[in-house]
Length: 115
Image 1 (tube, rainbow, N blue to C red):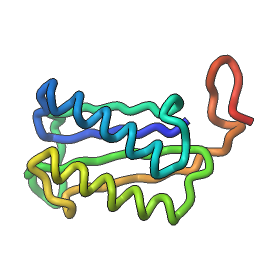
Image 2 (image 1 turned 45 degrees about the vertical axis):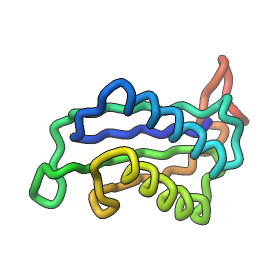
Image 3 (image 1 turned 30 degrees about the vertical axis):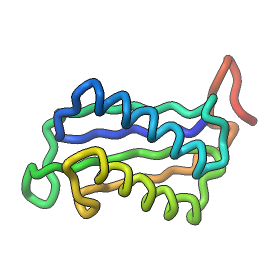
C-alpha cells in the first residue's frame, strides 16, 4: 500500500529511471516495514518546475502509506534524499517530500480496502 511519486525537472534516461524506481520501491518497503509486493512507485522526469525562484535541479515527492508515522517519515526523508542525491545531479535542499498517513479503510485494492 505504500505509494511514492517522484516528479523532477531533471531529464531522466531509461537506465536512471529503472534504477530509481527499483531503489525507491525497496527503500520504501524497508523503511515502512511493508512487503514490496504492495509498493507502487511513479517517476516523471523532465517536468517544467520551479523552486525558490529558479529552475535549478529539483525534486518533489509524495509518499503515502497506511500507518505511516513521524519517525518513519523522518527516516524516509533522510534515505530518499541520500538516494536521490547519489543518482541525480541534485542537492538535498532542492527536494521537498510530502508524507501522508492514509487510513486503511480509505485505501482501495483488489476490489476492496485494506480495512
